[in-house]
Length: 161
Image 1 (cartoon, helix red, strand yellow):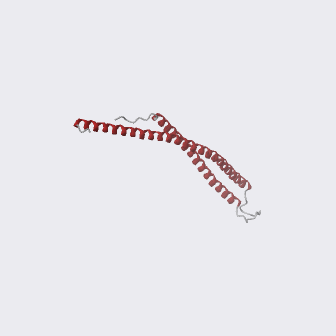
Image 2: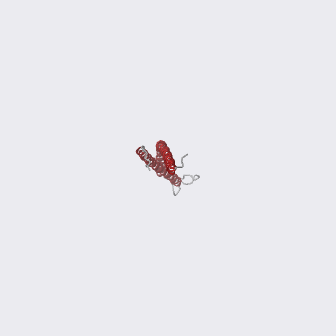
Image 3: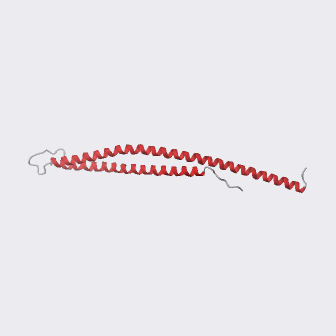
C-alpha cells in the first residue's frame, strides 16, 4: 500500500518555523511591556512616598509658622523633596509614553503572529484535503481490486451467467 506524501511538507515546516519566530517576538515585546508596567507601578508608589515625605516635612496644615516654633519648616528640605517628587512623576510620565510605543509594537506583533498562523493553517488545510483525496483514491483502488478478485473467483468456479 502506498504511503501518503505531502509535497508541500517543507512549506508547512517553514511556516511553522515562521510562526514560532513570531511567537518568540511577541513574547519579547510582552516581556518588555510587563517590565515597563512594573516600573510605572513602582514610580506611582515612589511618588506617593515622596508626597508623604513632603507632607511630613511641611507638618500639619493648620500649623502656623512662628519664630518660637521648636521644629521650623526647612524650606530647603521641602524644595528638595518637591523636586524629588517631580522627578519621579516625570520619569513615570516618560515610561507611560514608552508604554504606548510598546503597546503599538505589541499590536503589530500580534497581527504578524495572526498572519503567520493563518498562512500555516492554509497549508495544513491543504494537507488535510490532499490526505482525504489520497484515502478516497486508496479506497477506490481497494474496492476495484476486491471487485476484480470477486469476478476472477466467480470465473474460476464457473458461476458466471
